[in-house]
Image 1: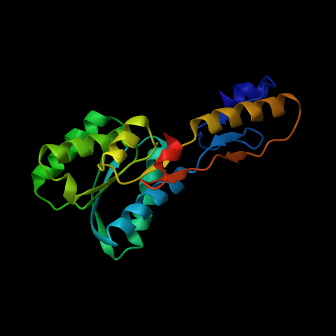
Image 2: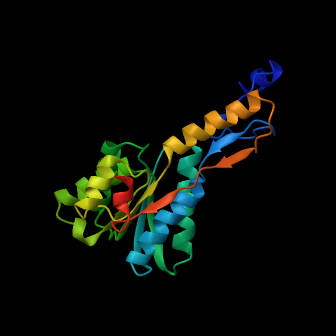
Length: 207
């Protein structure tokens, strides 16, 4: 697709999901998924006092965001000698898959202290599984996206942290980049739209 657009002289901008090996001159507008995993796990590690067993609910493993968010979570765990990643499994971004995976992990009997989920939907599934067996008060859960459901769970004291991905900022940035290219202006190859950590202290800013 990229080559076809370039051959036809049509300006092209990618938003939110970056293809591999993009040539210079084809901008990507989005957020650094590695940072979202680092922000999420950094906050969870602080809440856990740098101790405990961590499980990671990964999105679609073929998706760059899933790979980088998982990597960010793992990097923070590696910086905390008292923490260990004990399980990683793909829930493919779905709440029901997060619930089913968490149920299996609970049934295994292995202790779990922290759930670092690649998105809020899987985090909410994990929360439901933990609530079903009255274990939620013993486990810290985080997600990414700051969805309405996630913020409601945070207000209820069920979700500890999430990370805001600015969809409107990405969409607007994509349009701005396209307009500049059409007008013959130069656009950076990577236009960053920052992630923001969301906790109970600032969640009102995102509701």
